[in-house]
Image (cartoon, rainbow, N blue to C red):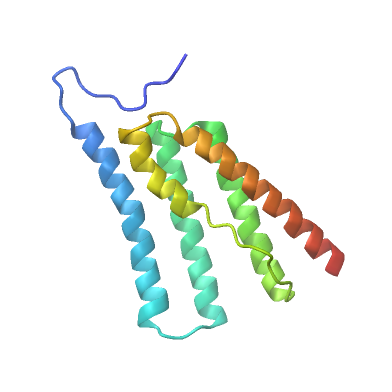
Length: 154
């Protein structure tokens, strides 16, 4: 049994679709504002800027994912596990940075998720959960490798 993704009233109103589209634009706008303010306007790299960037990123990802779950566009399990693993990977990233442990690669799935919201709404409804599961798997692998690297250095 599939959940109904977007509830369109019987009169054919497209307001719910426009609401979801506006939310997608809001996520992209938040990322853009964060980038412009924290990176371009300050013009300097620092631990304070890095910390602010990380916290802002985590807040945007958290509220975006909760909104997707609440609106019914993302399932509770894939959305919650994605959010959990994302938070752990960010935390391990901060620990690795403090311990001067370099990265082999950096996983940034939020941009893919934000872009996929429009695809899920207009082209392939219901595919966002599949993408969330894939990203959760990648984040889980990154979390495991981060854990191993941190533990080796202790």
